[in-house]
Length: 450
Image (cartoon, rainbow, N blue to C red; front, side, top):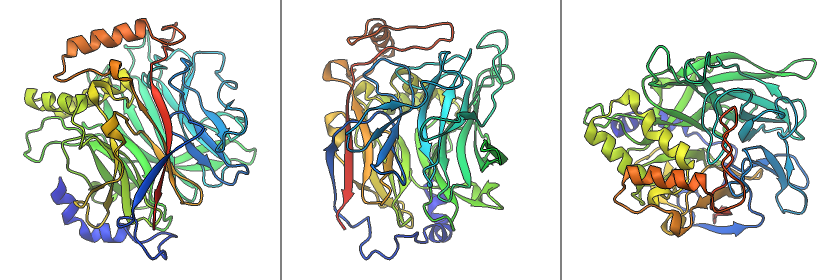
């Protein structure tokens, strides 16, 4: 609740101590923000690869191609080939699905999450399924190494527990990663889904093999859904942003939309101080957050000015009294159906809030007014601008309000069965769908005029 954030002003003051860019005279919150469209258009979740000349960008799936999700690399200026890093290597002969690359600050390693082998996966239009593990590789795709283990489903995909590790982010000094962990809990919990957030040390053995150690659950399972985001850029103030679904302030116990939190790590990276600090309190979808380089402000994605399918879904769940331990069902259908795409007229924009005054929120972009939705975003290596790739369905593929869930499911099923682009739905032995969607994409550059 917001009261928790306000009550934690002392902590917020501590965590907001400036990072390396603190000497800059003007603050980000008061600086005008502008954006332009960049060429080429990168795929999902683009991130820069530091210390590369020419500058390289790593990214995930291009939704228009109809291929399974993979990790790609390309020059920022587009003057060169697009290279697939995960199309070869261990498991490449199977229906593997890879995505959401995270690049270490020294530019040597990329961590990504991957579904490989016989696990149930959905390769397109989004990431989903069971059996996701974290992998590491060099920026040329070599030495692909599995970092985390999963408990494979037994006697069929829905008869085992089903474990996922995904959405890893590096600490600024490259010594740790944080990631979300999900136990689908089909056997012992009836499929409620138990989520937690973990922090682990990253090491490279003498023979060059990467591995994780000293893994701590810093946000334990509490019946809520989690997603991890960027670290505080100041390595002397270890901590990271994350999203968590949270009960309404009224204490009704009903499921709610995702809200933004900050975890200040204490006790040798083993827990979040005070269980985390809540930063947003909005009846909307707040997610995908990153610090400004001075660590004073947080930039995040929100649907708050665009009530649509997601907000309608959340309101329905609250009206029906869906309990908190089922609120992951509120999230997953949207991700499974469109993976951060503007279904049901859903769209988002970028917003900014000061860590010391989280109730002060300003809107940075207006792309959502035209139906665009903004997923993950990243700073360039010099902290001069933000980069993201946004997506939207063409007008004819947006579902009008009020939402008819039956009609929505039928329309989406028809879309997957007969996509308007090349390729077909291919549900193979591993359940990997490879249907393209009629998505428009563009890569945007955002600059603070300080």
